[in-house]
Amino acid sequence: MTSTGLVTPSPRRARRLRSGQPARRSVLRQDRVALGLTIFLGLLVLVALLAPVLAPYAPDETDILAASQGPSGAHLLGTDALGRDLLSRLIYGTRLSLLGPVVVIGVATVCAVTLVLSSVWIGGRYDRFVGKALSVLFSFPGLILAIVVVAIVGAGITGPIVAFSIAFIPYIARVLRPVALRERSMTYVNALEMLGVSGWTICVRHLLPNIFPFVRAHVTIALGTALVDLAAVSYIGLGVQAPAAEWGLQISTGQADLLAGKPWESLTACVAVLVVVIAVNILGERLAAAAQKEGR
Amino acid sequence: MTTPPQLSARDLRKEFGGGRRGEPVVAVDGIDFEVARGGALAIVGESGSGKTTVVRMMAGLETPTSGELLLDGAPLVHSGRGAEARLARARRIQMVFQDPYSSLDPRQTIGDGLAEILRLHGIADRDACEEVALTQLRRVGLDQRHLSMRPGSLSGGQRQRVAIARALAVDPEVLILDEAVAALDVSIQAQILNLLNDLRAESEVTYLFVTHDLAVAQQVTDTAIVMHRGRVVEEGTTDAVLTDPQADYTRRLLDAVPHRGWKPRRRLAASA
Image (cartoon, rainbow over all chains, first blue to last red; front, side, top):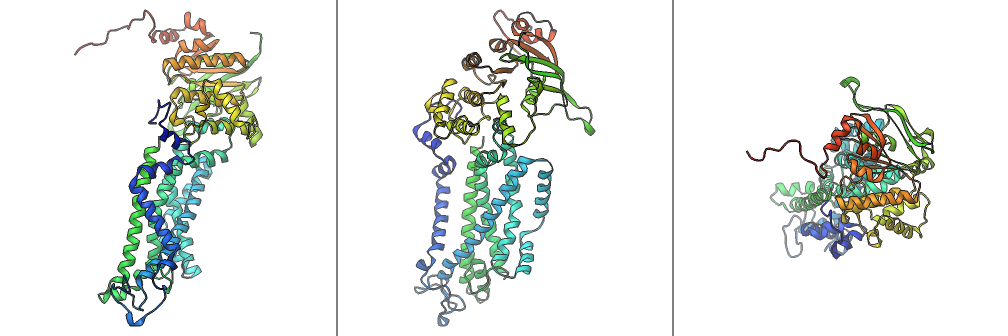
């Protein structure tokens, strides 16, 4: 409500107001840090897609004579115990390490948003039931759920992805519910109802776009948590299996070298996880702050 | 009155709370009123007198505890599922809300918002939408430029006019105005009141005008009821209520408003 009496907006503002997605463009335009982090994450996705082009070696190419080396001209980040190039494995590792969290959070977000909007709209017994179900789900630690699912479907990337997709629903739903409730109580929703607009249309075309900045912010933050959780599952040997390249697995397989005083394999993967998590967290916080500010 | 009452309330009552927590709060305590087709009724009273609760019940946003609301002699039903029932309901009653800042979707342009309603009610198809939306906007004194704007770049008065245009787009039988001008400054208030009078002259819409300001009520309405603590304390033509109030409460309500020749009862302590 900053522009109460603004009858003729500045040209720049007017352009933004007329554009289809005012929020996304304005946040990134106003916030250099958020813009930089978005570009960084975009580049990371590019690295994952272009791994075969960027990596100097094949990820599973072993050179036993050059095993467990430190950084050198031939191997910029050194090699692992089997003589595989660590930089190449890190680059290829981007694929599984990012794909997992993206799928998990994608599925969890779609489910959470659907549950939150429907329960806020319908209310009553259905709302209470959804609330209870989410509380029950919330009490299961994601890691335990992942171990249970892996016990059923076997080790691999599928089990943990399924488990965390479910485990993350209450995390996202919990932060979105109050936002959706507040939006539901806005007068314009009553007005639209009185004008004969259907509940479905109000939810999809009015409530969803209005809570979207919050969805985007919280989903970004959750992405970091999911990345750590999936890496942890791989680390304990239940997720991605060797010889595939994945950061969590890499931290685990590097332990032997680590104890022998050669930290390169574990260290590089650790740093990769850390950098991505910090990046998405800061971006998420920035988006959340912008959403908060934008909210009336 | 020659025309039969179009809209009437019979012993309408609404309680909030109650049950295990103790005594319920009686917001509306058995009121009756009638408005003829094309008429305009003011519901006047101070905050907490129950006037908003009355119109929220008419709008279907609250359910009466007892009593009935009739439109053309039939119960004003707010239930009924399906698109047909929803649209028919929308064409019976529309409402302009008190707060113009939250009554429009902040992410939808004014044109899109109007077009959505026009298409929904089959008033205009996709191609004609913008044209019709513009006509609706012109009716409330807005123009082409406002079509592509979002509520955030409009003033309170402009937003309220958009809300009125949107409510009138479906050509409702009854239009409820809940303190619709209270949040606006005086010059815009006058504009909107004139607009409402013009609109009533050209269509058969019935107004239900909720306000705490009798002077404002006089400009738009023919009859008035004065509410105090959930009851009707006075009713009659708006002019009569304003010029020759019978109830004590109405007199006090009128006295509380500064007017020409008005003197405060007590001087405020000017200095400490």
